[in-house]
Image (cartoon, rainbow, N blue to C red; front, side):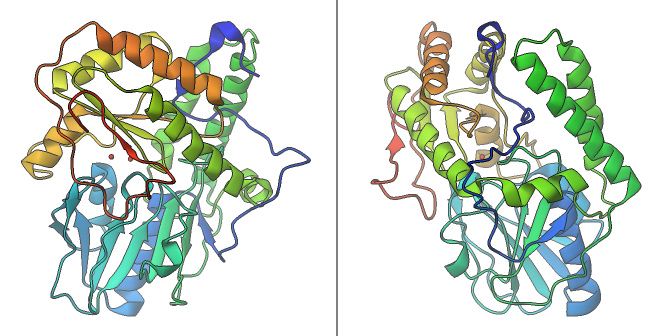
Length: 372
């Protein structure tokens, strides 16, 4: 349990062990397990190039830049204009093309028609109910974005397509996952009130995270492989979505800010990059650690997507937190947002493709309207 003086939300998971009475709703799909989602994607693309005849990888323009760079080491990359605000899948492609369709914040992605291989990145919601019928040949996901694991990625084929052989655990990856696991243990002790130096576990997280960006393909660490089947993943998903709506429902009426609940969490859109940076700094001072998904620059994406990336913040709502945590987070966001008048209305973008129905959660308009 988090000590009152050490309350926080966001950032990396602490150690959370499965309980004896958990529902054991581990993944039902025959997942091939990798050290990270990036490794799973690279293994698939290498297999596609060498065995299936893939010649080009098509990536959305709104996408994690380091992963896009890693993909380019395997296949030539073509970018198509698509992001959280919408877009169109590439057309006129054939069997030598592989299209990565990204589920932004857990929403249903746009997928192409025709003959290309369709690879869905389901990192933001690996158990999304639409996955079996979205038309994916393959699905990849980073598991440690939604589950308390030090490492882990998954690859599977809902369509029964051939998969690359599962990798072995590499020593470099084993050490990297060990650093992250050690950091998770120390963070758990810190949040529980133990006399732990926060900078010590932050340094371990940083070292481990840097090593996990390697393009060398490895199996998942022994710890994650053993714990994954024991986690109540379906309950974690429900809890995350419920928290997202709890938080978004409390963030109404603020100037120059909109919030939308997604299966992955809550996305805030500010009316200017300056306001975003002010809010970000203010939240961090109050131990609310938002994420930016992702930091894009001119030339990496269309101007509207670069602008959105500079005005957005992501708030975590995962199973670490209860309703009181969401109330407290909303209170801090409101306090940090209320002091400054809006510069311009924050526009409400078109509903995301495959948006969850109103019964499950509606877009929340703040003021004049509304990534990973």
